[in-house]
Image 1 (cartoon, rainbow, N blue to C red):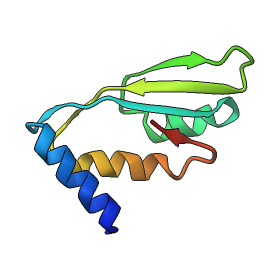
Image 2 (image 1 turned 30 degrees about the horizontal axis):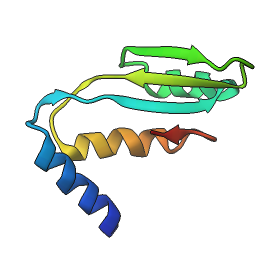
Image 3 (image 1 turned 180 degrees about the horizontal axis):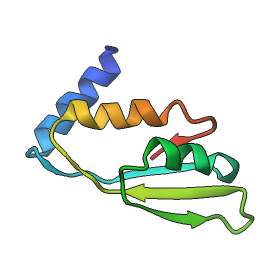
Image 4 (image 1 turned 180 degrees about the vertical axis):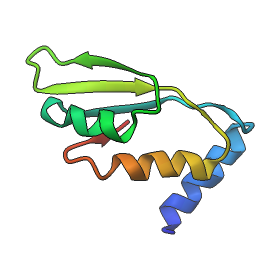
Length: 86
């Protein structure tokens, strides 16, 4: 684990009482939306397409049990080409 990831997990632990809802926001090329939906089919998500349709923003708010679980979601998402985590 990188130092940056360790610090992020420590910050999450300081500011959250697990389990709790956690908001994830992503922006990805619309052409890769099906990859996202396949990877996160077990989550309820809301979608908003950009004005040009080139990008889609995704919001999901699952209940997570730990900082490690938050990191796992970000790691899974990082496999999707062109995704940006907010």
